[in-house]
Image 1 (cartoon, rainbow, N blue to C red):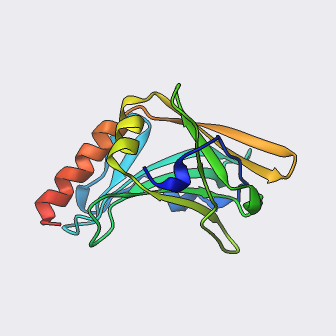
Image 2: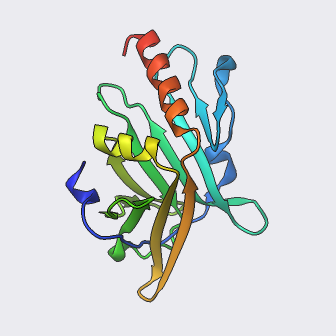
Amino acid sequence: MPAIFRSVLLVLGVAALPAAVLAESVPSGQSAVYGSWSVECPAKSGQCAALQKVATDPEGKQVVLGVIIETVAGKAIPQLTFRLPTTAYRQAGAGMKVDDHEPLRAPISACDDKVCEVRAWLSDSLRETLTTGKLLRFAYFVDPERQITLPVSLAGLDQALAHMDKARSKAGN
């Protein structure tokens, strides 16, 4: 497990994302939905992504929290990315807790004018925790005194990752 994800539950801020960022479509018939997760695998690339749009604004026009697990060319393990609004309080970082497991912390890796991201590699131990868990609670601050915690369903994640593994091995990556 990456060192940045060890420790206490952390908090961070959120930036609004266009809903299209996490659309549930997969080119060339490679679309699949597993529980709360959709999988996108562009034709023959082997570079798949499991996606979940966790929360949207009241009008449903912008994603408030999105989760992406994607294979990366040349890397043996997938990358886990949480996308948040730019209103996230970057100095506080972010935190997550799966069921009764120890809380994990991570810095906000990057922000631009549209989104902030928290990134980590999906190590074997983190993958096991996520695929055997039921609920991940993701927390961040929008200012030094106001924390937001959002639930991320882990239902179907094990099948989504198995789909990604199969697509990657078919493509020879």
